[in-house]
Length: 400
Image 1 (cartoon, rainbow, N blue to C red):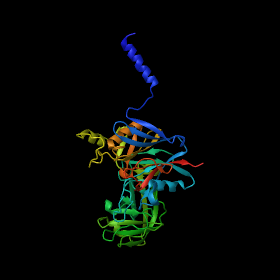
Image 2 (cartoon, rainbow, N blue to C red):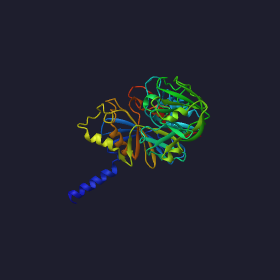
Image 3 (cartoon, helix red, strand yellow):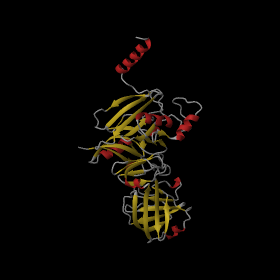
Image 4 (tube, helix red, strand yellow):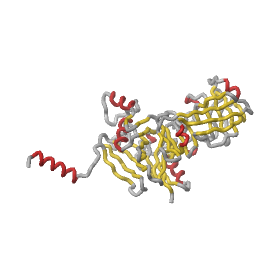
C-alpha cells in the first residue's frame, strides 16, 4: 500500500473516532431538561476571548412563545430583567424561562424621562412606542409569523377636512418630534414644560392603542402650562410651537374628529409582540454592509480593544436572530479581559451566522446585557451587578 493511501486511511479513521467540534467555538449545554424545543448553552468563541450565552427556541414547539414586557409596566421607569420576568410569570397562563434585556432609550433621569424607550415596543397587541430605526425591528403576529421587514408608523389626527401628522408615541419632547401622542402607558403626566408647546387633552378614545387603530375623539381641554395629567381613558396630544400646520388652530375645546394609527407594511398590524433595536445585523444570511465596510477599513484589529467607534469597539452585546426553524437570543459578556472581552458588531454578526441565524437585530448592550434563566442571572454583566433596563425580551412556556 502506498504512503499516500495509508495517510488518507489514517485521516479517515481520525474523523471517525474524534468528536466533531466547531472551528470557531465550543458549546456547553446548560439546563438540558428545561423544555422540549428549547436549548440553552454557553458558547466559548475560540477566535478571541469571548463567552456568550445562547437560547435556541424551536418555532415548531407550540408550548413556547416570544414576548416582550415593559419595565415598571409603563414607559417611565426602569427595572431589572429578573424583576420584569418575575412579574410576567406571576400571571396564570405562562412562565418566563429565558429573558434578556431589550431596546435602547433613556437610562439616566434626563429631566424626568428616565426609562423612555427610543425604539419599537408592542406588547400584547398594544402599540406603546413607534419604530425609530425602522430596519431593526422584530415582531411576531397572532398566527406566529416572524416579521423583520422595515416598518413605519403612519399616525394622524383628523380635524374637519384637515389632518395633523403625529410623529411619535410616548417619546421625549427633545427627540425631535413636533407632534407627540402621550397615552397612559407613559406614566401619570407628560413631563413637558410650558415654554415649548401646547397640550390637547383627548377624551372618548378606546384604549389600549393598537397597531391598527381608528377611533373618534373629542377635545376635552387645551393647555399651555405643560406637564399635563394623562387621562386614563384618553390621551394628551403635545404640539410644538414650531409646528405651523394651520389645522392646529382647530383643536379647541369641544372639537372632535378621528385618531388613526397604522403600521406599514400591513402585516405589521397583526403583530402581538415586537421589539426595536438599533442597527440590522443580518438580512438573508448576510452581514449588514455597513458593518462589513467598517470592519474591512479598520487599520489594525486588536482583540478586546475598546473604541469610540461603537460598531468596532469590543463590548458586551445582546442580539435577537432567527431562521426558518429557530429563534435565537444571544448575550455576549465583555469588559472582563481574563474572562470575556466582548465583541464588535461585525464579530457578533459572524457568530450569529455560525449559530444558524439568517436574520438578526442588535439590542441594547454594555452593562445592560443580561441573560436570565428561570429568574437567575447566568451571565456575568460587566458592571458586576444586574442593571435596571427599559424593557425585556422573553421566551415563555405554557403552564400545566
